[in-house]
Amino acid sequence: MTSIKGILHDKRPSTIEGSVDQALLVEESIKHAKEAIMLDIRDGNSWYNMGNAYLTSFFVGGAWDHTKLHHSVKAYQNAEKDKTMNLNPDLYYNWATADKYLENYERALRGFEVAALKDPGLGANTEVQKIISLLDKLDNAMKNGCAYLLIMET
Image (tube, rainbow, N blue to C red):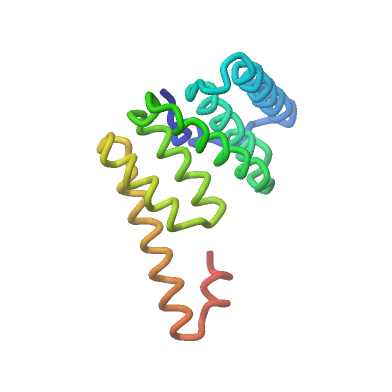
């Protein structure tokens, strides 16, 4: 099982050619995941792999196309339907990562908490604390009428 956390460590390729190669590889991964799903639509691992491919595609593509995040979340939802996937902490970590970038913080918190319970060494508790800190800052800024300044600083 692979956590997107490791993949995201260096999202920027050193050359444009490298960027194109990465994007093509990720698109090929999406294609293969779709083919695997067509062979067995109930296979949670295939859905999980498709979710990971879409999430990776989001970052490789410059982290702007939220459609890829929505596809990723849908794939993770389908993966979870396979009860064998419920033991996979990376499923919940990666799903929560997609939710975090979609700014679905409540769902992201739940996902990171599940991942942390399943594998405390995954670092999901750190992600929970980051989200809580962000939400606290936003709440304080809203109370103080400084939301615009807070957003401009980050």
